Image 1 (tube, rainbow, N blue to C red):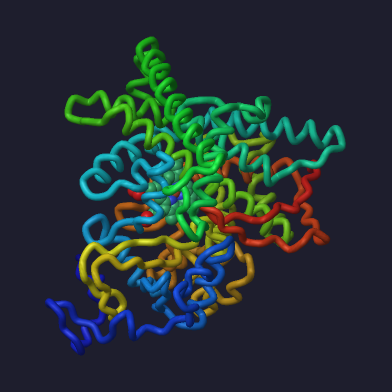
Image 2 (cartoon, rainbow, N blue to C red):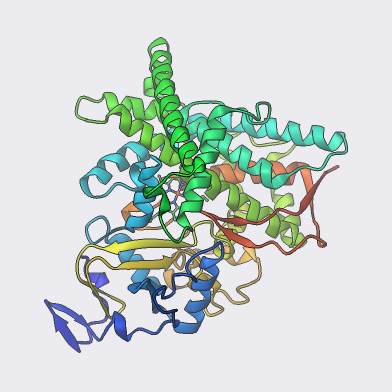
Length: 487
Ligand code: HEM
């Protein structure tokens, strides 16, 4: 355990060298139903909103109860930072999630623990290095251009662009392109088998996450059998793509020095005689990266477009920045431009603060410990908000409900205590910090700058209110934004 986890040493109780002044039973929390406890509040597509409201009601650490088993929710920033840092030794990912992901063979590094995690993590971070992303950048540009042409053609024919659907399709195309070295071309091939299989897996993962009872471990419904087939087919496809990449790398040996995607980089790593990566490691991490990279990024962009469309002042400022950087170009083709979008970066930070696609993380304590002055026994599940703790608190972000990218822009580097980025954890933290964050930021900049350079955003004020919908990740129920061509 790192020493920060054993916070305030108030010396009231002392068990096995741990000092604390309360136990989980002393914590406040909502009353539950007999037998179910708070289980029903923790289900459905709005559970993150409920847990966030409880933060305001019960404070920075509170207790829930799922079928009689206590769960702790911590939103104290220092405690969150310590918990995230104290992995893999002190805490691991909550088991329910790990088991569900492994059942569908989409776990990879995300569900690995201990030494196995260290090994897998090396493979993934190498595959998502700045060099690999930079080498992939022209392909990302081509994919974005394809979407731009599709939208222009739709508008020229008087059709409306379905942004919700298309942003997800583009995110899928980009992540499959980098993680598997395969061009799905969703724009021109809407019935692609790999896309269909990945969709089926994501849907199952989401629906099992909100199911009250894991029935699929007792009997299989047709949807579960379909998901099993999809898991098998995706695995076989990635194995085939690995073989094709190996052949390509034999014909073009420079790809070993300069891999153009994550799969090639992982193949190079696996050929190192010091490593013991199997093809199965490559497959599971390519799939885990796709699962981790589609909806997180697509939802972030969708939320940002919704927020910009409702905040014309911010949208105009962003459009001016994008025009100045891109000049006559319709989208970015220059890597260096990725550093020239401070307002876009700020709008993205503000989007994560207000509408995180991963609003809560769940950890399991591996030993007795103390968190925020509370004794936590081994095997306890702890939930923590990534951005909905301090991020939605007026003390830290005045007028917190407002979308104000300006709050992320400073003339001089702020003091640590005033730095808003130190108050939030949109990409997690510690050694398990999201390895795809740099890719996500580049993708957000590529796609949003293309949109702002070419289109006006018009929010449909007559549309029903946009809801936050939690499936496996949290996304908007709709993107009621009309695109029209900019002059
Ligand atoms: C805006 C987009 C994204 C957000 C908000 C996001 C957020 C997160 C968060 C909160 C975690 C948990 C970190 C922790 O436990 O401390 C995580 C882990 C992870 N993310 Fe992302 N992510 C995004 C994009 C991506 C992309 C594009 C990829 C893949 C290319 C990716 C792959 C992963 C993987 C593999 C892990 C597990 C890391 C580990 O357990 O060591 N993510 N992400």
